[in-house]
Length: 152
Image (cartoon, helix red, strand yellow):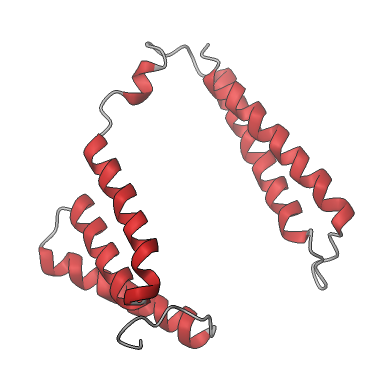
């Protein structure tokens, strides 16, 4: 039996218990009147359930061939680095350029990096996703999104 899954599951279970214990003194409240600890408490419960599932599956699974080096085998390092650089640029350019333009550019880049469709479908999907997210968050929920140099 490989110990990776049970060990990581017990780590997340310990974190879940810690989050739940810290949330109780803050005040959980009720479903009708939630307190400040309501969301962390229920997130800790969900994390605990998922970590118990990881531990259980790890204990039931048969031993897998290979060690820790198998985790990194076949990883597309260039794509991973491109995603990290693009996310960094996204955060740097957000205030200067604006939400719609930078989000559309990021999604276009990520879609081009991962999908095997025509370019107009990738860019169109990215634009549609950015506009819908802007309408939901910026217009409907009235969240302040960076306007940028063009004012939208």
